[in-house]
Length: 301
Image 1 (spheres, rainbow, N blue to C red):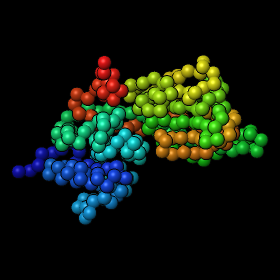
Image 2 (cartoon, helix red, strand yellow):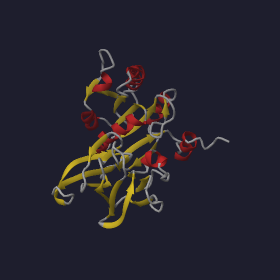
Image 3 (cartoon, one colour):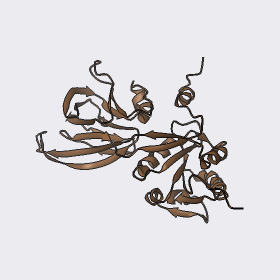
Image 4 (spheres, one colour):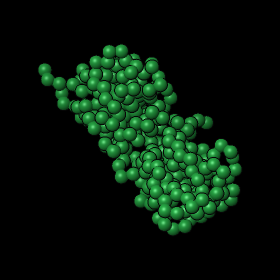
């Protein structure tokens, strides 16, 4: 009897790289998918934990070109990394969490077979989320003023872009422009530019609002501003945010706390929405608000 057609004929499996124990769940899921007629591929770092891996092994970029769906087994940190890499390829993502419920990896190991059966049969909820594309432009005449600047760093961020003070302490003084319009000068520990996804990360701990992921907006959240009138603001996802470093001892730019760049006075960090979106798949009945209640313990007396 021929296998029934599935919604995603080729599936990539990606585990948390630094956890050798990931081999067990990955292989169980791989065999489960293979039995249903799915072509299974593994990324190279995940396969390194599996002796005599019987499945195709590719680099992440190669998986992005080959796979219809990627299943990420780990935590939100693992999903952030994979989402940035797969964004240009428009690959759908499913997150399986090893421990507690995550904001992005919301399927448990105990329910992953049941959930994946439904997803392969075409029963799932699709959620699109925006990313940020950020550039660092640098060039100085030696007196703190800008000359002809060039782009020296270009990176994607799923959660946030942060311009902040460095290890030596002291506030960072920045100028913020939106779509070429001057907004304010700010003295603070830093400024977070967050996506709706990142609104529940560093931005939340700095007093920023929770933003529903269906919205295409950016949240600008000051970190310990010297002037209390510097409040978080929400801007359109079509905006271009420019942050100019005016004065600081050792300022740095952080991108999802994954990539970092040491800044100098006069450097500009430009942030805009990335042209591709991340497509997350969830079980039928998934509710963002229910997830918030559980993750943030809103349901406790």
